[in-house]
Image 1 (cartoon, rainbow, N blue to C red):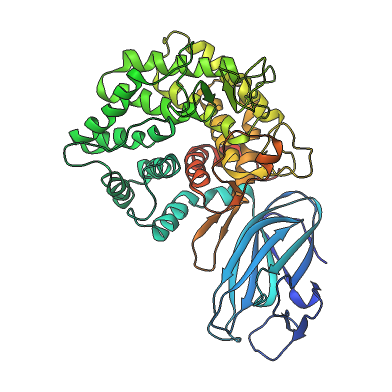
Image 2: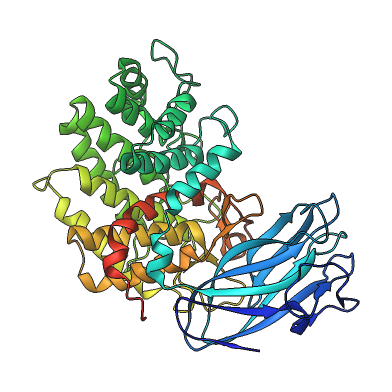
Length: 504
């Protein structure tokens, strides 16, 4: 075992000195390896190589695994750090020969003291031959300096064409809005062209769009209609966007005027819903001269939702049922039982986006800032001190089956950073955003194909109980996470270089 301490250094750990699964051997029959040999694990699921790494301080690191795969079949592995999966089912293709060695990279947060790092086969093909582990300890500023937004967008565009990325939906719309934020900085025309090609699948030459818009979820991608009108001036995008705006004239509401989550979710307000409609609506109003209505509506919607969902500690319950008929609804409050992390993030991002659009003298704007301040304080209170991220059920991080979720951690990091930047909250909260940023960056990795991956993302989630939330699938490259990551990263790129203390 070696001790890794100084930021910006790399320490090598030979595989032959690691802990090996039964049946593994240290071999020397294929040239090109480092040290005294390499490890050949048995061809079976669960075979592994496990290293122990000591660190003086907790912080982010890049893990580099040297390997060879002389077969023609993939050798898939999980990479875990201290029992938590940081890269799941990584498919390692043939390197061409057993004497041809290649590396894969993944990012992780290491804790102070001893860390256990394991590469474990997930199929009967076993793991590839493993030569060594390099642990590169990078200062946070170095991690932030990498243009992860460009890497993520380029990787996603390589995985999907505009015709295959998915239909009109809020997760794809969220991701593509994040891609637009990257376009705004880089001005790379292929990023905007990709978005336009996707939208044009659904909007014809006259601006018709075949959607009834009977849920708030269906409205989020309308934000791209406003974007494309702003960028191109093409009137058909205004026609399509106006269909959503007019739908709200007759869209069902609670008695106090909150938009139902969907016509099929009668009398229900979900924290998710405000992001699905309010940023679109606010931006629509200012693009098309309807701001007198949209400024008032968006602020009022957020305050209605907060009145039913926000608790005294600043956190919001996931949902509210005005009728108290849902099985999850408390008979007195109408609230759902838990604080689900992404609903908190949707609400926070919607609040920030609306505050960025509505004027400073907008009635009730000050009330909305107070809601945001309580929420940011709650984010900081419930941040996981070990990882910098936030838990799937936010206020129950002490439970052993709870887990930190990447999309909400991106959302909270963005909201805190922007709230500090705009002066809505005290500058002391900047440190929470910095820790959150480092925590999310540690969920990035590079696959053997050179593309960027983001892990630990909860798939789409309805209202449920604690067991339901913690049992949700943890996906890699789910669009909920990719979109939130891009929005966060574009914000933190502006602030992290000055704000992150490399010595921390």
